[in-house]
Image (cartoon, helix red, strand yellow):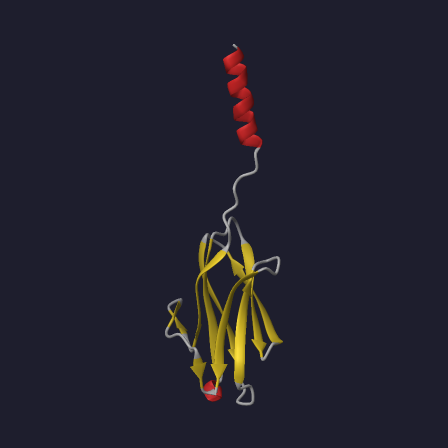
Length: 128
């Protein structure tokens, strides 16, 4: 009887323990000139500033339930856009777009953040 009681205590302790939460991460992230069929067509590291529009494509894994990520676009360290994107499964592809003016040449970064603002990935590129 003591063994059964001990087993029940252990079982209840296991059930009451918090579940291990999978970490949200960016499994794939690229700056691209276009997204077709939910896939990036290329990966941009430098491009002419006359491109007019670029996309930040991310594949986010590890979500438990619905959450969100942010794509935060920076030009020379200054935040120019913050795009909130839903994540609705443990393996989710999403992207944001940024219109590029020819006067915005130079160094760019897109910081992919989780719902709490923690940086998951930083993508860098330059416009010539």
